[in-house]
Image (cartoon, rainbow, N blue to C red):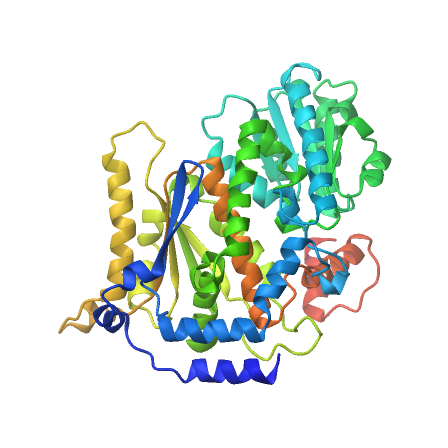
Length: 505
């Protein structure tokens, strides 16, 4: 990090720290300044940053930091398909899957989407016989994205029953297939390299399940989603049922590619296209909006202020909509695998806090579980609320009104607090939150929301000098596990040796 950037960080740390109440009292236009709507086709998303400690002076300082760290230029390189993943010497081209990037990459992504759409259509038309179920096997980004989208958007779908399995624990696979007819099940194996140990183990067990259920040619009911099609062919999957995607699309950014096949199956080709269109709308906003009114960038300013200046080690995300219950799980990987780094892009020590720990829960459930700490505990935790203006259920709208009033009330209570002569009943207040309000949980809105989080993660990384596109930190434990599984002698600590012996491995 440059001397200039360090000096800006120092000046940010030394700035006054007015309370939220003071910030509102001193600026009658605060809500309009820090609330922004992103228009989509027929809908929009409201981002409200007013109950954070950002003010005009802080934003101006973060704009200086953005200039010192070349954020705008790095953003332009990302969206142009430049080799921005320096440690692996390649681009990060998930935006090309939505239609923004290098021309040849966008065209290639479009061809691959058309290939996938044709396969979905063929399955719909019965080319594979009667298919009622889809078993999607992956792990990490190959599972979290599809699982979130299907859970959020496909609850009432009458197309296919889709189950997503990631855990190598056989109980997970058993639960997924328990209600499936193997003769009517398509198995999608999602692995970028097609060498992922957990995924291939689950795949082999799924093949055994198909065979045991009377399927004479289980390999004829397999589809591969991969950036290594030759590996999938070696596994035994016919080339016509291999859906490739580019090696420059990272796993946790891959739901837009053929990894989204189960989404297209459950939602239909049109719905999957709308999902990508929503993301493209956010890409365009990120590419063109001034930094002070750029939602991913402004959110990164908030994140960095609390992590770096207020030393907040965690960030909490609460979805006040059951359809978004898996969003905190998805964000954990996106944010912590991307930015949980201790070195900068050049390999030098980061020298400051990196990504905070992302955690969260669902709406009113969380209020009765963890909000005690948020309101009265000793930890300062920035909170993020996500809600939808419209519901999808058929019950009395009183349910949804209660949900939204609880959401908005929690943000108000965190900010204003409540004094009491009884310290047990005193709320300190001045606790920050931001709120994201969707018009509805639909393909476009969810696509835009996920792209917002991707770009926010990127902006955080660029302002810290981190490469958010590698994940070497997940490899060491896997290597050790493989050596244990192969019963290779290892220089293990006494505790690990004792555990191996106790488990009978």
